[in-house]
Length: 513
Image (cartoon, rainbow, N blue to C red; front, side, top):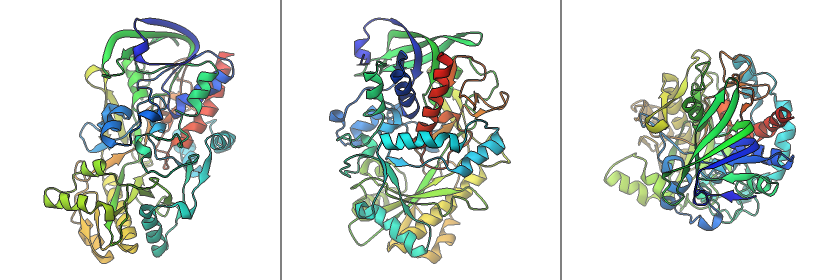
């Protein structure tokens, strides 16, 4: 019982098991652990490679190609949004920034009221969240742990009189190196790579890395096989070898972009809703330049947040969070050219960033907002995002808020993601009104992807039954990942997915009998 890589698969393999799980991230790993420890035979297929902490060299240039979808280059079709998703054994949990929120009650109420979500309630998830948080050592940070970069956001929020609080993180013996986004070199991050995947393997699960699931085959309402193509772990190129798994039950946990793509490649979309209503937390922010040395790449990425603008009456809400600035990532953002770009990078040690995560999917007047996943060349997912005026206004308002935080904290100048500079609070509205806020006019990053296989009670409006997470059209197929969210969840989603997966695993076990 072990973790196999593409190098171990030297010929076509045909396997059988109780449960085949596609994906080893926040959804798949929890399901695998729950079912393997319950005595079920489990096979996990993971497209990414198997990497251990000894291979995490803390450099963006090396680790982005190894640990991220499309080598860190995934984006919307029009290039207006850069999408950072993990691709490795452990999924995005290997590269996330360890921020932990439970799904807000207001979000779950919205799902029930507007999207027909039945059976899944906050009360049902609380015991699962409690167990997950205990296992992953989720604890709130202390103010004395906060790095200089996040303290700027804390000071600015305090000066403005806005809500502020310290974040919860899933770490143990954290050294606060700051490079969570390229894999934890000391295994302090309690990711699926070092927690639930090893536990699943110890209980008998078989994990196959470098296994890209091409399609499901099915007969009527039953999945007959899961067909994966094997990658060479050194080149990441597909080989001629295949893995075919026949399971009593199949669970898709590939995430909000890859899970819809698998269903579409399989020709399984009876409602026409697969890949629709895919949502993000579009992220922008403001950089403040300060007299003191900040070094925004030193210390854990996030400690501080504010929900001051989460429930605003008009427009798209957004969550404010302290955010790091790394040399390669900052160098890739086109906020200026020539001398301006040079100056920004030279001033990086004296710069601080406050970020904003916008809450996508809550416009009740637009039933098909967000992105649509379709298939491109070679079955690769294509992501077409429906950019709206509501989003443009939200991006502008979020940048205004983050500028105010930086200036209130003492920045002598501050600038937005699209390179608009201010030196005082009374300049903000005038300057931002001169900016352009449409696609490719303001750099937008996406670290949280949700939706695409929305859950609900109505099979004509949703893909998955919210009472069980079973696919509406199939008796032995479950979808257990962030793709089932009917909107974004408005907070960093890992705890939401962990809890959902632990709850959903019980329904899979019932299906197995």
